[in-house]
Amino acid sequence: MTAAQTGWPARYLGELATQRQLSPHTVAAYRRDLQELSLLAGHEDWPRLTHHDIRRFAARLHAGGQSARTIARKLSGWRGFYDWLSQQLALAANPVEGVRAPRRPKSLPKALSVDDAVQLMEGNAHGHPEPPELCDRAMFELLYSSGLRVSELAGLDLVYTEGGNGVPASVGWLDLQAGEVVVTGKGRRMRRVPVGAPARTALAAWLAVRPPARDGSAALFLSARGTRITPRVVQNRLNAHALRAGTPVHVHPHVLRHSFASHLLQSSGDLRAVQELLGHASITSTQVYTALDFQHLAAVYDRAHPRAKAK
Image (cartoon, rainbow, N blue to C red; front, side, top):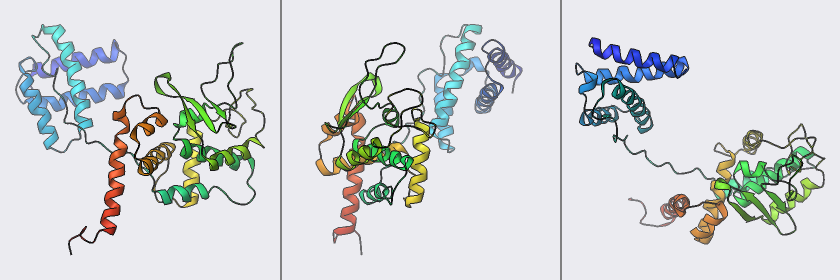
């Protein structure tokens, strides 16, 4: 490594630590990324590297087995360094600008099979449950019945409140008589979502024993302390319940949302309706469930068609 190669990064990292006051951990990560760039560059000085060089380096990282996410992070770090170096040396251009990491493979959302979803829901109904169990049952049924985000579930009130006097207006509420919930999703978009019969039954059972909230709120679901439940608590309770029910995969609230969408699409084939119920602004976000639907159909084909598999 030449003196120039060591000098510029040292000055840059020093400014990150002192002027921008980044944490030692973050500065160390930038140092490692610049050291790797220096190894890729060999004896070439920093100002002489070109756009073509950076693209070649990114390709080498990819060929070496580094993930697209890791390469994107390193490119971001290199880009920041060259933005700074351009101010020191008046470079004609940032050689990292416009270089993109390899496209990340799209991962399909995890969804339960219909049988596993039914087993999970029925595993929450037994004996004479105490109020906390009734609360859990109502939450899990509602997540699967209506495809809510966990933040939307936690934000639900018993009824709509206008707000005022320091009390915020409701962002979501239950209308049990109409059999629906009104929620505020991403982008502050409000939507009405139907509530299925098992969820309505579970909600009615919970409301019959729900104590007044200790924080004075109209929260539909309460924690053990009597305050509005948080998404983290919902996640922990659902995971614990899934383990008790013997569900073969890890279950978190978004798995129930994915399962709702996948099962509804399998039954109806109506992508636009699923989009509306999920609250997606674009149909593109919903189209991922068509891949899940095709996987389901392919699995059925593999099991049933006499020519599906080679002898």
